Length: 355
Ligand SMILES: [Fe+2]
Ligand SMILES: [Fe+2]
Image 1 (tube, rainbow, N blue to C red):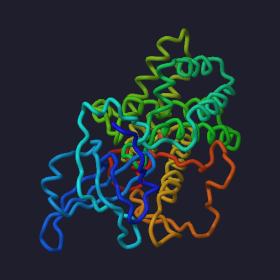
Image 2: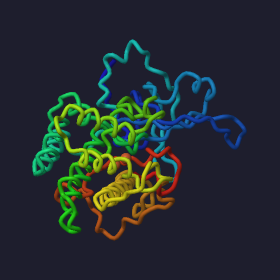
Image 3: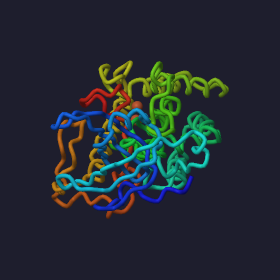
Image 4: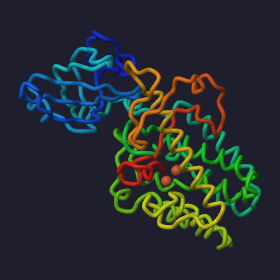
């Protein structure tokens, strides 16, 4: 298959389209004239664009599914100031052709190189002083399979709130915040930093890294919180004389990091470090959600983000203090188009789904 050359974020009005995209959403709707039309959201690593098919909608819709890679023919138009694709043909790309696909063109990726973020994360983890926690951390960071999966995993479901490297990016932010917050509240820094590192490791098994980042069966049936505790126990089983008290505290931090029972936490935080971790996770989730919405904003209301489902509102960005991409990189800053795991608690709206 020829290389992809037209990317969603770079499309211009009147441009003819002849390129593959991933199907992120598909819906048949009746038009005012009473005929069905097809609404499709198409995506690639750069973003997404809404497409409409007016002719033969029912027939075309039957030819592809959510998550499929499709070849799209059409023209870019503008509707109420927002670019939209008027598609004349959408055809599923056959399995036999998928072998030659460069998936990197279709899956959104973190803005910072994963190697750089991994180096920053491991440097922070190296500052943990407790010998037992050091041994535990090394079991994860020296495990090549864990490291390579951790570097590429998304942190959330849904193409537009998730991307390759998203889990690493979120974890790096959490660990950086833990590093800064621990001395302010006189917390056990080593346990907070280690807990921040491990809190979402269960996501390695919860989400698939394939197009669309859907939940795995295991993710649906068990979930990343319990999976994280299982992974931690498996690792510590290989460590001689690992203190039970440390293991218990880390387990408590993992199971309580969602904060409230109705937000998917089996237990509420009951130590200061667990409470700090929950607050860190919550803060990074919220900041990242707005940050991402700000990056994606399009259309005439340039000073507002689009509607952010998790918040039930839009955010005003017109005060000029949020030109995040102009600021220097900081390890815990919001200057990264972050993922957020806003859908991990099941996809219902409301604050609970943010972390
Ligand atoms: Fe989580
Ligand atoms: Fe998290």
